[in-house]
Image 1 (cartoon, rainbow, N blue to C red):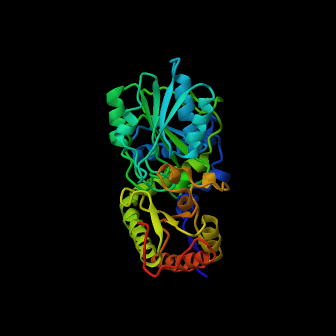
Image 2: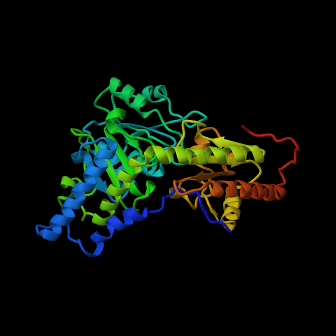
Image 3: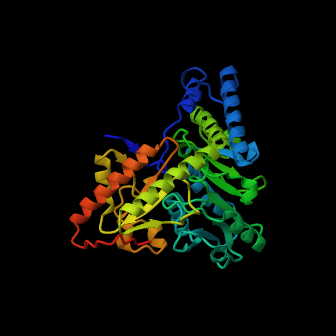
Length: 396
């Protein structure tokens, strides 16, 4: 039985060459980069080099790059740090209703402290319009946080245009984008986007887990989230995770070096699988924008079949997929992202996410297509709601 991994949006496998670059910093060059001896200096140089690699990839200055334990930590740092640094009595944050849970849950904490949070709804394709953000701006607005690409439906947002409109309204309003799903998939340059803050995570582009980055534009002031020593120029306490930092540096360098080649290859596989699903399985709906989406993302609803049942049967057949975000796994509620785009609850409860990566093959895609057809047919036979109509009718 073929084994097919289609949960790359949840996490990507660590590249072997990245792993090999990390190895010396576990047992040989194990010094603390804050220590003032030769082993400490070796570690310090490694951290400096990785910081330069990240900065070069996203078009930033190395002094604007801060390492964190995860993108979740970085997102919390942004929201809470921006609020705590602001001296206004009334504070408003504008975000979207389809942000990652690390942003939305952090904002829930702030709401309990009296911060006003406005969640902008997307259109049916998951796009956030410029006007939908601008109309909520006022003198109390401290921060706007809109993700660059959605983790569930893959829709890519017009961040450059939204940020420009916000800055035209008031250049002092901070603009943040969660670029976790986008980095390594599309060419992201912070200067081009015009943003103040950006978060990313290494394990989404074949790097190690447990390491993230917060980009803070020069001149932008937010309060620190984690107090401690002088690590990260006094902005984030805690001993540096040198092996993971080294791994992130090499992973992001490799991702950008092979960006075009990987993008074209993965997009070809994605389109092949979408075409086969829509051709061979009736009553399906592709969620998210058809073209303005991440190369490896397929979020699709299979009417008259239940998400957990589909995943279980795919797993039995050796195919690893997901319902949506790994960070909301275990919840049996329909996806809040899909519901926000207007997908009916019934369809949202029959949706799965297939996220492709550079290691997937045409043979795996064809196998997945065949298995999906069998799985959906078997599940629909058990559904009292399913009516067997001969015509090959699709929801989209």
